[in-house]
Image 1: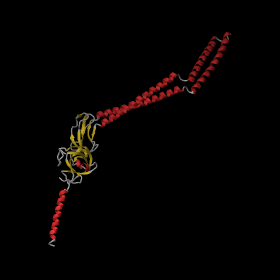
Image 2: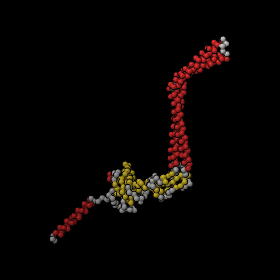
Image 3: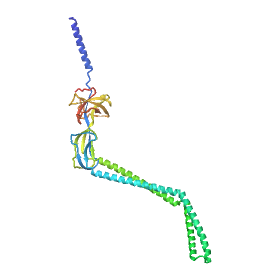
Length: 357
């Protein structure tokens, strides 16, 4: 038993020495940690129209939601423009309806001219001519009798002259009936048809102009509606007001900043990785983000953009390596930010969920 003790001690010494030399040859790697800063996007909000600011509903530090009304310009002048545009549009629509009615009437008239007179009108003219012929023949016989009698003084001179006048009148009525029948049978003149077709062309042009006026008026209404909407300044996203640049009563032109917002989403981390570790952070890699204030409460993140171009490490990034080292910039999207991350805050990004200073 006493002889075994030195042997055990020797084995322990040799084992410990072997483990020491193994660890010396294979030192444990520190967790891969990247350094960077929080990058929160902001937006400067202003009106697209000019006017007098009627009210500003939010102050610095106020939280806002997407679509929430933040400020408003006096919209009365723009409301009047919208009302006038709508009235013009109504007038244009009425004018278009009238033009279409005139076109329909012109087309009907042209169709009538091309088709000629109706058969019923021609038959009526023939009947009128037949009646006029009978009347003329009767007047002719009466006049012949009066002519024979007046020679023998069998009738007064007055009766003879009345019969003569009636005969000549019947002749003229017969000629009028014949001319009217020829006109109806031959239809309208070429010049009348051409004039009717020209009227159709003019009416179509009037309809086109009226339709264009309606389109223009509708566009003016839409523009006026958009302009009126632009008198209200709404938040494009959830965020916090960080700057209130103007106050109610201010006269502003289109463009100047009225409020500045710090957006809640997206929250990014701008980190930098050396070329040897670049392959460990492809897009889509899940990482943990640590802050100095809450080292035991990491945030979940996903690697998004990785720059294809190397650059020198920014001076704002605290790294153990030389600041002149070439690194690749990458963007980590923080998925569960709780509002505690602030613009420019230094953070650490780890693959294995813990960091070692």
